[in-house]
Structure formats: structure tokens, C-alpha cells
Image 1 (cartoon, rainbow, N blue to C red):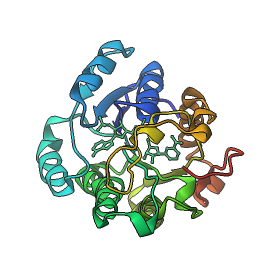
Image 2: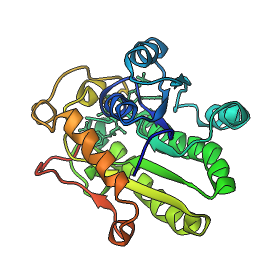
Image 3: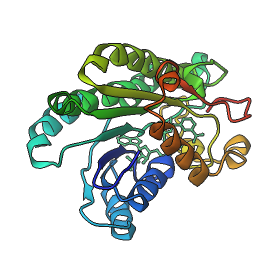
Image 4: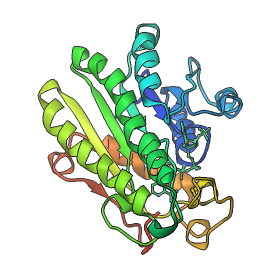
Length: 248
Ligand SMILES: NC(=O)c1ccc[n+]([C@@H]2O[C@H](COP(=O)([O-])OP(=O)(O)OC[C@H]3O[C@@H](n4cnc5c(N)ncnc54)[C@H](OP(=O)(O)O)[C@@H]3O)[C@@H](O)[C@H]2O)c1
């Protein structure tokens, strides 16, 4: 796929996978829209990106109704979106028996309802143009359960189910849906993972520190997106284990 003059909207662009995707899409000639909560980090990233026309649109995925209303109202001011990458998210490292209920709310608001809200704001403009891709970053934890992830895994399974159904609904409008289920990638995800009180645990983890390099991971994701014309990729989830046993 050619990305020259394409507009790619990336959530979670202030860190990790989203930041690296932004860098690589800009290198490929795309205009990127950068979203996350940390506006300073987004502006710093924007200043370093290759090319022109990049935009910062701050949003808090933990407030999905606000995302839906403000972004729907803003769509007319933005360039036509060719690719939406629902990447922003938060993980968890805590046991069900010890978790505050609020941990589950936070994970579902950010990882699931926030993703649906932004997709709902953007997708109608793609349908009108009969063109576009919705890409959601789930996780291997969206396919396989493990300890310490009851909330995270639930939210990521939900993303997989949502995307499977959405794909079935919007194929007739010529909209492509891709779900990516990565294993461990070396980012700040472990530091930002919620503990049983719903607060970032703020510590590293061996499996993440030894995970795939984030630039390699981002280039594989872009490669997967580039294969949309291959019928067999459209018929399956793009499913990554990356040789890692522990789902993140
Ligand atoms: N790294 C891995 O091993 C791995 C594996 C499988 C799946 N994933 C998934 O990949 C995605 C990116 O994770 P990462 O590894 O790049 O982690 P990261 O470095 O912690 O980045 C997470 C990004 O999500 C944004 N975010 C978090 N809460 C948000 C909120 N309430 N509203 C808006 N943005 C929010 C953060 O920005 P702000 O803090 O500025 O808002 C940040 O840009 C996540 O969905 C994660 O579940 C990661």
C-alpha cells in the first residue's frame, strides 16, 4: 500500500507502539494525526516527524462519551481519514481476588469503550467515501487468558469480538478491518499497567524488557496493513505470538 498523501490517525501516539507507528508512517509520506492525553509529548513528537501537515488531537479514551461528541463535531475540520489505528491502551498486573472493581471499569473504558467511541466518530466519514481501514491493537491476551490479566484480557477479547463483527458489517462499504494481537513488545506498558487499586504499578518487567523491539513491531504492523489486498489475510485475524509465552 502507498501511504503518500494518506492520513493516518493514531491513538496512544505519545509512547511506545503508537509513537513508533507515527514515526514510520510519516517516513512513508503519510500525514499523521497524533492522539493521547499527554499533549506535550505529542507536540514534541510532531516537531520531529518527517513531512508536513501532521496534527495533534488530544483525547482521553477513559471518557468515551466526550470522545464521541467532541470528535464527531470536529470531523468536518479534519482531513479525510484513510486509516484509524486504535492503539491507545492500558494493561494490568493484579489478581481478581485483590482488585478494586474500579480496575475493571478503567480497563474497559480505555481499551474498549474509548476505542468504540472514536471508531463511531470516524467510520461514517469512511463509509461516505467508500474507503478506509480501521486497525485495532488488541493483544495475545485478547486470544489467550493468563494470571494477573482478568480485566485486561477481558477488554482485549472484547476488542477482537467487536472488530470481527464490525468487519462483517462494513465490508459491503469497502471498509477494511484489521485486528493485531501482539505478544511482548519493549515499551512502557509494564510501568503503566494498573495494580489492584487501579494505579500504575510503575515498575519494569523482564518479559517486556526482553520483548520485540518497538520499531520492528511497528514495521510488521505496517506490513500487515499493506497486505489488505490479499484475500487470505482478510479472512483471518492477524495473530501474533512472536515466540513469547506470556501475553501482555
Ligand atoms: N507492549 C506490549 O507488549 C503490548 C502487547 C500487546 C498489546 N499491546 C497494546 O498496544 C497498545 C500500545 O501499548 P504500548 O505497549 O505502546 O504501551 P505504552 O508505551 O504504555 O503506551 C500506551 C499509550 O496509550 C495511551 N493511553 C493510555 N491511556 C489513555 C487514555 N486514557 N486516553 C488516551 N490515551 C491513553 C498513552 O498515552 P497518554 O498516557 O499520553 O494518554 C500511550 O500513548 C495498547 O493497546 C496495548 O494494550 C502492547
